[in-house]
Length: 479
Image (cartoon, rainbow, N blue to C red; front, side, top):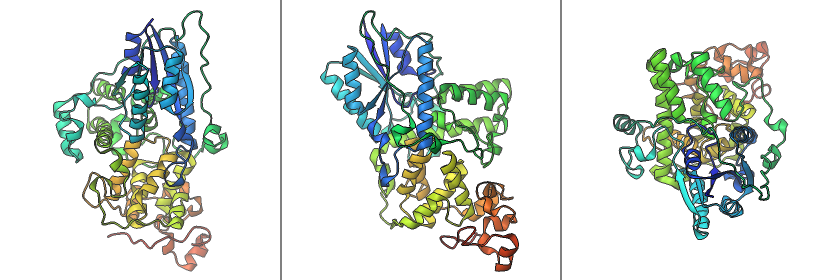
């Protein structure tokens, strides 16, 4: 009997999962395994949590959904905790596996774990195979090898679109070969991770009614969101016009949390876009959603190309001309949403209360930390790593480096936060939604409360420095 262990990583789905599909085709017996890495339950860079409460809850939900899906197909999801380099080979030995299949990933920690697992299994004579399953374009289909791809997005995108095509999205298997041999001792499935494993309780990840969505993890929820956004609510039609929104559930697709854990395949999204274009409309908005998936791919391949260089202060440009600061007080004010700059504070408060922030918001708060405060951009990236429900190592770190001027763009990426606030929140609805102490102020003052005279502060009942923080630095909008 040919037995294959499938080690799930950031591919927590049954649909369009080449690793699972191949194992089902090759094996008489498939043993799905998830290992919660030790590093996820401890501190990360700069003493932030590695995984915060919203990420932890989303992971728990996603694993529960995957276990249900596998059980519906006659299988099981076995869950273990510890170092994958020890745990995966131990499970393989326990079930007398002939092979272990798993997802290949570009992150440095993920690659190290993969190398350790491969080495231990090879020593034991167990076959190993890896599969690239988390990008729109397959790594092997790129016009150039990863190590030779362009470092600027547009030339890479143009070449890739001209010479490559996404592979078709495949359905999930109908059935899994029985995970246990008849008559053998049953293998303990193991318990799913709980918030307590990460040092949190349920109240730490409570749903805030002010948030854009109730983030339910798992393949089922991800496919439901895809169906609702594209077909039921017909939001794709105007995606390009609405994507810079700040309030509400449908100004953007919100697919990113399910993409980050692999609950939703980017090729499944692309297939839905193409079907929508055939059946309803093909326009700039349908192209733009695919364009965003391509941006996501670009950073995955850039991470694969440059590896640990992305986590250095000078980034892939190896800049040594910026004196990054380590001002703990200013950083803490930024992290808490207490900088006294309402557009920054509103976005950070949304992140802390929900685990999510719009793309427009991420660009602005990152620019403020890196370019206005000149605080080491990596502290912000590490804070996002813990807090974001849709954390993805490539998307997060490469975007932060890009914004800080040490990544893929040599141009000045500094944002005028006050201009951005006026442009994207002209009536200050977003700011007052998350900074209610500013509610009732005219939009100009809601965005720049320090401009009020003492008489105006008394009139509106908002005293700067008491009811709302004084600004951490002086900012003036560009004309």
